[in-house]
Length: 416
Length: 116
Image 1 (cartoon, rainbow over the protein chains, first blue to last red):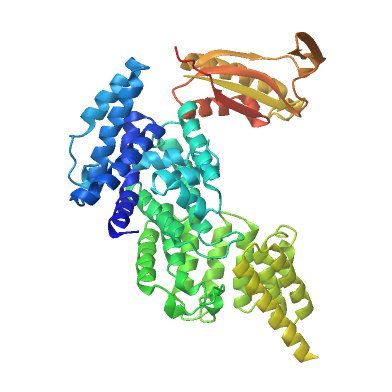
Image 2 (image 1 turned 60 degrees about the vertical axis):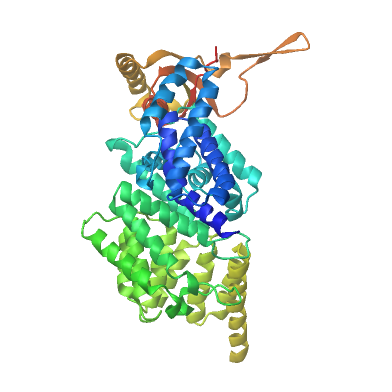
């Protein structure tokens, strides 16, 4: 990619959400708005190498896309004249013909985000549409990130846009009575995008930073436009997790568990900032699950080592989390914290109680294997590692579990 | 725009209605009145059970009849409301208030608008 192309990609990524959200607001048409922006990008590809980079690329793209949208609406208006006259007038009055700064582009991204994450769309469609429109990712980039074919992702986006239009999903920020539930839905989608970057199913590479960075960016935008404690909590949680990414894989591409990570590789500047943001959020006193998870993550990030971690507080925070969500996974993590505090026998009892519900959950068997081996029950530990390996869909993770199991076998032999 | 709210439930499931079937009938009556007052009600009916259904197909000029519903599934179409709402969010709100939503499923679909 030459420098000009790279710059164009950057400008598109930074501005497409804003441009699309503004165009959809007046045209009420996702497809038309996207076509208009695509044409503007094509124009930029042709003109910028000759004319040089415009002073403000985002504003340039917005004006070009708006002109193109007017053309497209006119073309359609030959078929249904009355309906589109209003849209044309709106488009022309919306903004002056020139926009000099990115600030001149109207910001309707909040509407766009709520519409893309509307619960009447299935979650896969929400993710793809959000990344395509607000993230400015191409269908190809999304397909690569989700290890899906371009045709699948393209279809998913087309179907979602069709449903928005045909079923008349409103392009609106939800009203007071619904906003909490709808915001929860948006946060869930953003967190799913983030988590997808950390678990490549059957993939070879553990992190796909693009997606994680994009999820953080989306959450930052949401928190600016619609400030809320849980949104800030999710943002902090993702920033803290992402700050540790350099230590998650070793040079050979192997997964390094938190316990063994080289903590000097963590982005301590980012951790400090995210921690400060979290403490500020706490002062509002509107606690929720994302803030609690962020607090747990912060305790890990601030600890000098695995053993010198404030397990007592972590245990208490997991306890608080269970008041929001009695999920067995939270109980699993709570038991792990308990084992770290020294209550290893009680922790094992708790884990055994969870087995029937977590039978297909790989981390459950990995955690229980570890605790069993610490209780001196190597045989049972080996069985659990085997189950974990069978359940894992990630090559790097599988290799890590193999090593743990083999280390166990070696120590069993040594005992004999 | 118009949305069709299709009401599905398993046979006899109305016994599970909180407060019993009589309470359900009263709630349906109240719902219909509310929808009329709000100006969203276009039409609405309950259907006789699927044991009264006849399915009709015409193939190669011949009409054949089947005694029974289109598909033998546990949950069957039991009635409908045709609602005039401004968008899907409003339609979802009205559909959610239909008493059968408490034990069955309401499917909402926009009515097709033919161009010209």
